[in-house]
Amino acid sequence: MQARYGERYRWLLLLAVMVGTMASIMSSTIINVAIPDMSQQFTLGQERAQWATSSFMVATTVAMLCTPWLLASFGYRRTYVVAMLMLLGGGVWGGLAGNFEVVLAARVVEGLAAGVVQPIPAIIIMRAFQPQERGRAGGIFGMGVVLAPALGPSIGGLLVDWFGWRSIFFMVVPFCLASIWLAYRYVPVTAPGGAAADRLGNRLDWAGLLLATVGTLCLLNGMVELHGATSAQAWVLLGVALACTVAFIGWQRHQARRGDMPLMHPDLFAFRSFAMGSLVAFIYGTALFGSTYLLPLYIQMAQQLSASHVGTIMLPAGLVLAVTIPLAGRLSDHWPIRVLICLGLALLAASFALMVTISLHATLWLLVAWVVLGRIGLGFILPSLNNGAMAGLEPRLISQASSAINFLRMLGGAVGVSLCGIVLEWRIAAHGDSLGHPDSSLARLAAFDETFVMLAGVCALAMLAAWQMRTPARLET
Image (cartoon, rainbow, N blue to C red; front, side):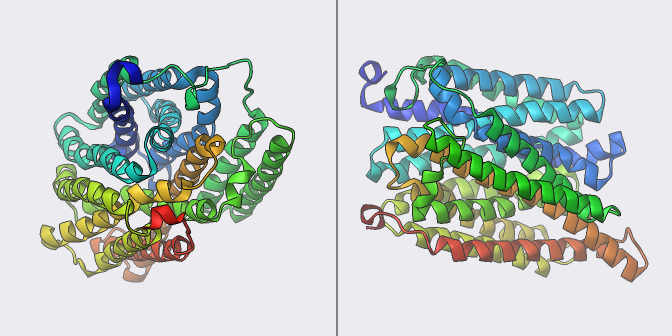
């Protein structure tokens, strides 16, 4: 491939995986615009409706752990193309679904595909680009990827208003088709490092995958049950999740000692930058995906605006984010990465905290301003986090590192979506009881405000971990 396309090949390869990642990210976030209409058609409560998002994120989270094994066993191209076919099929299946159970099944298929795809770009950036180029490559890649969530809600909101919620499932189809075509041109058939794919020489850690899956499901279901009437069942589920976590860590150490490929190599966490970066990724995922779930609901339920207004409000923020990311990517080649990450988290926290200043039926520009402020913060975080956490790792650990940090980010995201849904429902009920009007607009607005304040606190916690990240001196200058 390098001989055929020359020096520009690594950029063409980045373009190829960027299109597929755009499709996977779009499928993860665009569903939020359709949740109110979907809830009305299928008569869903808030707790059940959020599983349209949570089921995708659980599948994505678990599938990310399989990416290193898939790449080593089948190579870049076969792994990537099969994942795109799954995403394409899930989108069409979801759009044609006749009941909510089929929608959830389609979302799981889409989530599995997205989980396999999303760690691949970071692996390519770390292997194909020199250290002084990685910030710029990450910035350019990030600029392209954020166009999906930037344009997705805008187009999706119009589609929901014009054609109904089913239409948003079909938005990923052209992206999937384009990514498959690009993959056959630019994505290599080899495994990471240029080695030949070896199906027989690699075994998937099925026991570790089972522990991760059961632990994740028990964690999320336990969080939901905490707010229900069956608190005993909630604590049982959370206890099982904790037991699975302990067993998973012990099993991964056992796999590493006997020379097998673990899903999450314990050696990764011996590097301080990766250990702290992983903690930041988890907390950051909680805030990012929680807010991505919360904002469309806030616009429609609290401010009583239509689905098309979601796109109107989110589009400027997405475009600002697309401009911020490449600039921040260049800065990350020269500035201390922990400074950029802390600055981004501070701006993100401020945007959440400032949401409480917006009154009922406020002017749109104020809402747009706070959303834009948060997206500027994201622009500083996105190009820096993976590069900073993975800097200085041994080449043998790069695939594992990308898979692990994306797993923890998505696990935090799944927790964030559930947490926001639980806290929102809890605070709506609390304010409804105090006001005597459970469905009043003021009760909903107050409940959303308190949920946003919680997210601001989560970002503040992430700043403490981000400041502990230490990267090699060549990346700090």
